[in-house]
Length: 606
Image (cartoon, rainbow, N blue to C red; front, side, top):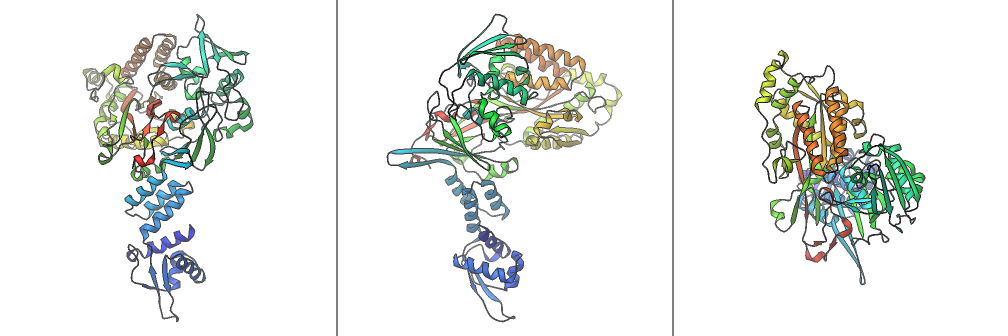
């Protein structure tokens, strides 16, 4: 590979001679070639000889200092670059391959799409009458860990669902069903919950799951992630008892009607006590669960999963899954380069290719928004200044800068409840209440807003820069600061005037919103904090789902009155699949349940 890269460097240097080949010979000295590759003349003679043996070029040396030798390229720059990219991809370094193509600024779209098509999608191997099906697909997200206690992002959560199971399973509409627990019950006070486990469920390493693993899982969550996702649920566990190997009794400090929903989340996936203790922090790289697929290998950014033959709900049809995790800095260039393959998540297909595909736009979505911490001395400490900011934040302009047919405006975390199906995007609220508040504000509202510090995580940097651009057009300077997800959950975020958040509005919307409002409580003033906590307590005690939504909408109205929450947009996700795919069932946010899908012969699609 190094030799071809050196050939590419020569092509780059003499690019005007190398776009098609063979060509007329160019005159050059070994010293000049050595300078291009930063090596000695003796080394360049060896390298040129090896390139000539491979048929890449012809070298006609001429004797004498005054004579220049003749060099003829036989392999065009474009072809050599694609061949090098193919080798990188075969070594599981797709992103180096994409970067190499882009670094030479070549028009390689058709060639790169051709080899990417070969690399991704369905790979079928037949041995006699036996057939093995593998799905290889790129995930535009870095996978930091597959430990349920340490996951942060949707891609990680989705793969955890393939590797692990929970006591309860949640369908796409939020309905709860038995899973590892075949039944459960609660006492009259709704503080004592008993779960009855299926017998014979095995972990990937062969051991049977028992109630001790359930207790260990929940206690481990509290130890490893006391401030992690949904911590307000598991921190409310008072006691866990295991009367026998197949039953678990969990006592809560106070009633929580969202407790079963938490047990259906990826966060509460059951882990094996013995393997977790053995692997420690490495468990996220070598996860072991009871799920329909098991991790068999990790090669760099490639995670390889095989069907678990002993899965308690039946072996999956798909034999192998290869997930190629794309780092954030490569996401945009990958989207530009990737061709459509049989199954794609969160994509927008070109018009010329969409006709033969099926696309599902999910009811779930990601909602992005800003909050304004009530910090003493902050630039947006007064309600009047926050109202001014909201009025200057041109959300229609922000939507115009965002591309894609799945981005809409939104004014609520419950748009179907507040606006109805198919509602048009919002119009900014320029109502009399805001104007009256401005008129009654103090004299400082007449002066320009000072520069504002906006803090978010690296994954939302693009959104933050678009917000900064829109604000600059309205005369507001935004200073952007990025914090890693772990730091974003600490007091460091309180240094901000604005925080850019995102919340996933899927079947676990209620859990996620309680998480969000709990976070807002941490940087709210005392009156707002008290009201938020009371409403969230009411939600946890409310058995009726519609009643809980009413309380959530009261929270939104409260934050709206204080101008502490600024909705930006919602992004619905699409899953596209080719007609050759069968058995498609969707999980959270349109992710496909891998265990159920199967493919017709590859000859039926192209």
